Image 1: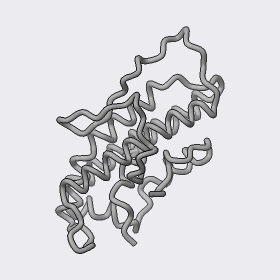
Image 2 (image 1 turned 180 degrees about the horizontal axis):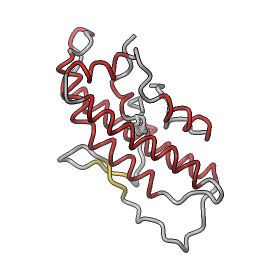
Image 3 (image 1 turned 120 degrees about the horizontal axis):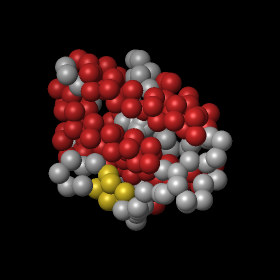
Image 4 (image 1 turned 60 degrees about the vertical axis):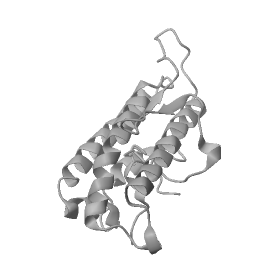
Length: 183
């Protein structure tokens, strides 16, 4: 079974991240986030929180993080469509998967950085950091996989759940978009 092209950034973190992320839903747009034209990576239009800012609730944190992952997912899907499209509904070739994975790495990294900059609910800092760290580890694995067409194809094949740890951490915390392969 072939995973959705955007799964690699669900991270992330979609991330992914790269983390790993999915869908092309207009409702997912966040006016506080913009895409850079040169890399396709997202950057936050909101200033980073200061130490004097009130800590968000868990629900508020999840909502902000899931918006970041949704935007990342949409940008990754759009990038994949621009790079290879999907003529005749055929799955991409290994070389096309490699091209997608290489080009999506900056989006995944930007997503991870945005998540890392979010103020965290009090008492959840370590749990969130484990999720973010697993997303950055996943980005490094994707970077290594992108060195060959076969490695990239393996990431997208679904034969190995390369983002299993990150997904479990995200789902255990309560994310709906981050850590999900849903489109």
